[in-house]
Image 1: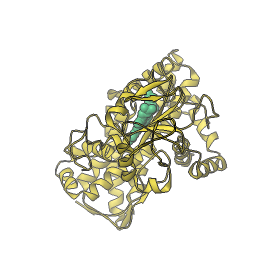
Image 2 (image 1 turned 180 degrees about the vertical axis):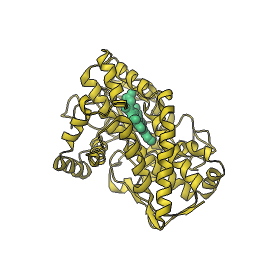
Image 3 (image 1 turned 90 degrees about the vertical axis):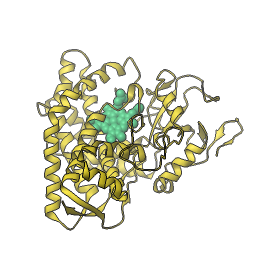
Image 4 (image 1 turned 30 degrees about the horizontal axis):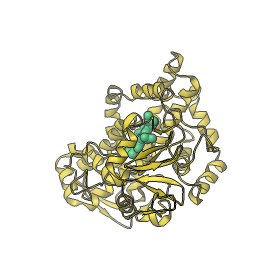
Length: 403
Ligand code: HEM
């Protein structure tokens, strides 16, 4: 429950980025949702909402709720951002519009259909390899991580060398959206020591991209004058920043959900065509990217609560995705559920432009597991990941039984 403060704001006294919150995510989500439509979090000085209807209202009104001040805790217009803001994620129309159009075309369903066979073959090869190895494996590292870290950089056209920089860069990106705490500082140290910024800058450059990938296609739009060359580089960077870890943790979450819910694993085994549904319900049930922020462009009101100008509003997607007003039996992982309208990919003009790629990747992995594996059992404790802006598993020790 929230309580009013001296300014008569409903206040929720929590730290969503503490280790305790990260290790008790469902309790945190319930607290946020129960606080009412919107509440002020004094520790960081932002508004928070975990109710489906309110989150949806904010997503759908970019004029009142801007992305150009940054979608994390930092106001990137007033404070020094850790890197140059994104020309798509951290932009409002008109800057956002041409960049979004380019990525939407590059990632069109037709383009992705061409990749589907390669993704499926790669997933089957990886699952076969794990079965041949036998014994205990860490499915978080050896599959949920290994697959996206192979297929997405290949699809973009990144050079094969230096890819060990991708994970630390992505970790820094998602820590930097949150507070400048120990997690952020540690991730930043790794990146600085390893020369990761130099690696990323080099990958964004046109001359370093392998022809035939998304990267080359993005630069094609720059050559035709639809976007600037600088923005083309930023869009390549968007793949590296936003496209890999999110999918890694989304796949791991679905695998863990299937292990913990044997009836749903049985359904998937009986019909591997449900692989996409198993992923999608996993995203609803335990969103890997649990929060995204906006900034009020002027004083406004949400659910009767007055908000000042240039105040941050955090949409707690993970909580909204289990809002009982929107979802029947929301705490149940049910792969037969109609999941249309979950908020794990956001919605509105910034709704995830890579969602079809993420689905294709996950469908390939979960489909291969369903066809080739009869049983997955935990062989040790799962370890949560500790990244400010992400959720999922860092380690999932399992034993697989071949079908
Ligand atoms: C399970 C996997 C994924 C999740 C949970 C996820 C989540 C999200 C969310 C919540 C947003 C909305 C941000 C906002 O409203 O401010 C978003 C936007 C975005 N995502 Fe994803 N994403 C995933 C996979 C991907 C992939 C695979 C790619 C690239 C291939 C990608 C690229 C992007 C980009 C570029 C944006 C910004 C779009 C815009 O501002 O118009 N994402 N994603």
